[in-house]
Amino acid sequence: GQQVMQIPQYQHVQEGEDFTTYCNSSTTLSNIQWYKQRPGGHPVFLIQLVKSGEVKKQKRLTFQFGEAKKNSSLHITATQTTDVGTYFCAGPGRGSTLGRLYFGRGTQLTVWP
Amino acid sequence: DTGVSQNPRHKITKRGQNVTFRCDPISEHNRLYWYRQTLGQGPEFLTYFQNEAQLEKSRLLSDRFSAERPKGSFSTLEIQRTEQGDSAMYLCASSLELAFTDTQYFGPGTRLTVL
Image (cartoon, rainbow over all chains, first blue to last red; front, side, top):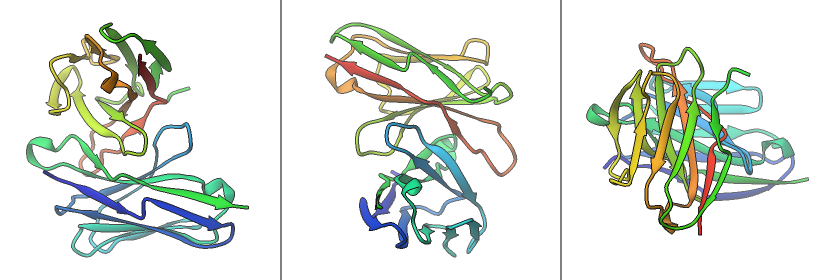
């Protein structure tokens, strides 16, 4: 079945360092979405990428969608303690599973002050 | 507050009991989704509705699970004869179906503990 994989599973950085998480899908995606989940919280939508090779920025966050639309990355420049949480990528299903999102396992980011 | 709401936020039950959770989506959203999340994992899809019609069900949704959205607004998820393996966070999300985007907005979840 369709799978979405993320690496690394955990990342510990000192405040001010950069952070990157990578997402790979077993199938070509129509779009990819990124969510952030704070400890004890629920997933919060960050962004959606639709076009091949698309790059979007949100302040210190840069999101990329691969040319083949099978991979994506999230890069955070100069991390802050407020960036702590788990970052998930998710891709929609296809055909009979079109309505669902397939989530990766997430990358848990810890930031030391 | 116009976000997705879920009740209860926490539920502790004994094995074998039935439980029911409620989700109220964002008012103008026509799609409603249920996911389950266990510790260290991403959300796993259970089922989704477009208006009142249940369009997809995951294999994870055994015969003990049933979901309804009778009037196309709120939804309920019932688990019968709960098992310890059902302990998880149950997340509801809603979206407005558009041509190329279908961003899902999640509620705070209901944490189920089966003793």
